Length: 313
Image 1 (cartoon, rainbow, N blue to C red):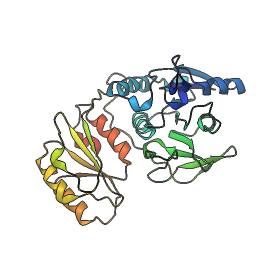
Image 2: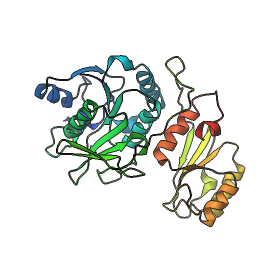
Image 3: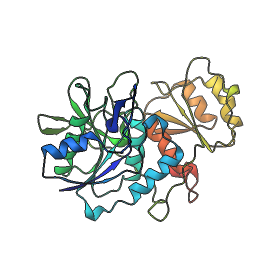
């Protein structure tokens, strides 16, 4: 079996040296060395388009990663593993899931909660789970990740939510499945977001930091927000798909760029505040994780073949 390993850095590719945790200068990951020392049935073809701590990711880095993803030769591998940092895992996995949504191969994004030498690191288990799922031919783009309860959950890459102070990850619609004791159990149908067919190897996205992402909080002052150079705005919502519409309506009406809100549940009865912001011009994005919506919006602004709103819808 041959697996393409795309390494980007992150905790899974880091070590403790000089008083802090940072990526290994040689770009290698101990997880690959350990796996190949214990198994002889998999050949890894490794590329290192990035070698960064994920919190440092830039627009240029996403463009570099996009090229590496579009360069994948489906006919030459049995699967793909992308290593990533856990801090921005929900964003990077959404990006990979969107770009490779039509890939004919199983694709896994693997991260670690701690460096691999830490006794409670889940990095090696996550990596082994990814390899096993590729061996089983699980088609789609997934994130296998062991939470603090000891269970390795398998998430749809475009459904993952950002972790906060907890090291655990959850999905918008719940985990796709679980992997325990060498056995994979599907929990719900696979959900994956895909892009319109505007990108490819000869037509790569040109991502810029031109999307404004807003998060709701009490007494939010929209008059202080600068939208110079912004091509689109994405506003996340409270859990009931609401925000402070009396303050936000004026901001939306004065904008000359698209204003999107996420996530809104399809079929859910809206609150008055949700209805007011939509009537003011906000475009609701239904049943999509806000992290995925943000990455998709960056990609929408990285092309000129479609309007941003058509691309998002």
